[in-house]
Length: 214
Image (cartoon, rainbow, N blue to C red):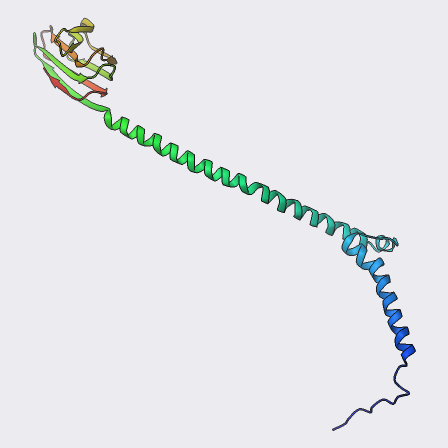
């Protein structure tokens, strides 16, 4: 195997040469620091060489990007409580909305809807009434097929003193809202004064407990 020759003492650099090389390297590093590194990394150009070499522009772009990144970081930190607050508001809105929806379901469950078909022969009458509390309301609508009728919409409290809300003769139908003035029964009496059998179709929706023929 070939072994390289070991250099002699005369071939090795002297101490003065090593010191000189070190000084030169240090000077070169200082020059590169002020002409290349500082302009390119920090946009610091004390000599002007960096701007000539367009290194300072590179450093300015880096500084701008770093500033924008820091601004974004601060903005994100500031927006975190707002997000939490928004989440809290969303949860609160959902709870309130759920409660309102539940109340609506309860109200809808309390409200009743019915449809009745009533047939009246000539001269025949019929009375249908609902049990309602004072202040309760019922939406109603009725229409006559085959003729016209006389009617009386009225209420009867538990004391049996009847109160008329509305009445008319020779009518083919009526719609509106019946509001109970007292606790008791409330509804309609119809009589067919025509010579033919008539049919009354009644629809009710609202706050009552039952609807029946009296």
